[in-house]
Image (cartoon, rainbow, N blue to C red; front, side):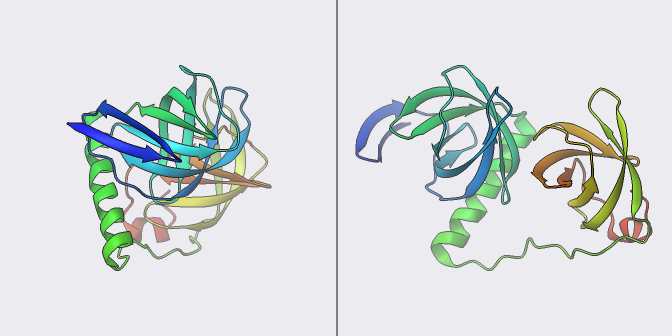
Length: 201
């Protein structure tokens, strides 16, 4: 599909496999220096994303991003322009399909005022003390601050990298946000609410 796009006064024509949608979502990204920076999306598709960013990496550099609406996404920088850069996303086919559905839903919500029905109740689990296992096998005590069927926030002295895999008790997840004395994770699979409330994490 031949697409003409204008971003910050720069027009270009290129062939893309996926239709892009214009959405402004605030998030964070991490470069190879392992520092985190804020960013805003310009446009997205299941194949790539253009970001307005404070610090640009080098073409070919691997980047991990996180957005509340999308979770963590990994990609490779394909080009820099102005105060922006473009990423080619590295996703499995199922993740790509899921991202396409999410982008369609978000675009409808932003453009047509579709109500948000994706929110899930957050609560304090009955069993709050858990063992956090980080990539490489290191273990650290942690305390669940709150949880939903999709993810959780934990108090912990451990500082796993953004996007890295972790295990909370017996549940596998990914780190989607870091904050002082804690992390937020997204579960690899949605957990049944009754099991989560019972402490079966």
